[in-house]
Amino acid sequence: MNDTSSDAIAPRVSLAKVTEVQRLGSTLAARVRYAQMVRRPIPTEQIIALIQAARLLVEYEAPWPPLMRQVVSDLTNVIRTP
Image 1 (cartoon, rainbow, N blue to C red):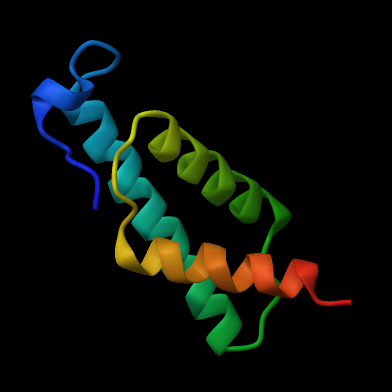
Image 2 (cartoon, helix red, strand yellow):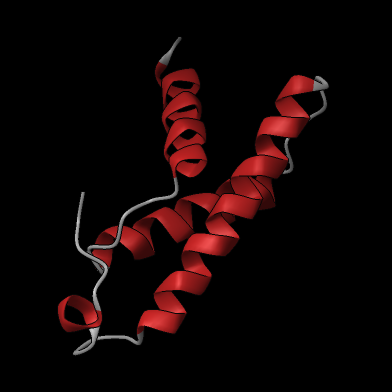
């Protein structure tokens, strides 16, 4: 996993901001997973926000929360499957 120490990301963004993106990404992933479990449609806005959070974490070399990684992987597989 990538290092989330303040030394690794301080030059570009504060650790608190990265932590907040991780928290929000985890929350969004939980909402998406719940919608999947109860067979409800997943709002497009939530998918877009989750992908944007993932991109930010990649950009700042910060680890993804486990559920976020799982949900994004699952969504990617669904999108790629014809």
